[in-house]
Image (tube, rainbow, N blue to C red; front, side, top):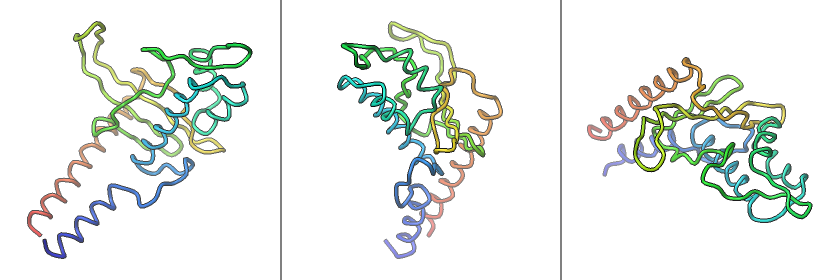
Length: 186
């Protein structure tokens, strides 16, 4: 492999992956958004490990979730046991960050103070539970203290955001196609 190809591969890699992990207050690309969501999901899951006080639970959730989202999550998932609080596992846990594969199917649309993360799910009639075609997503909003997951969106994603997700997918596809062609002919 010649030096030009190596340089092009390194450049392509740098476009795709950030050099360093950034704080949750600075979500600038897909990788950082997915990392933020994964940490938020892990925070939620950790609440099933041991009994905690209300304040301890707030400390776990505050870095990732708005007050309104925390209230919804609390109401749907947290139970009192012996004067302390915990979550129990379930197959359908409302307000948990969906365990997406975070793949090329997952769209991320950046707005000034909002980030939409969503996927399209085609109709399914397989298995014990079927569903109609729909979008599912999350809305992350910038607050004074940084980015916070603010809403779970079930089929309520604005059409202009869905369109921007499709346009971003086309642009990404063109960039990768260009890089692939350059690698072949470099």
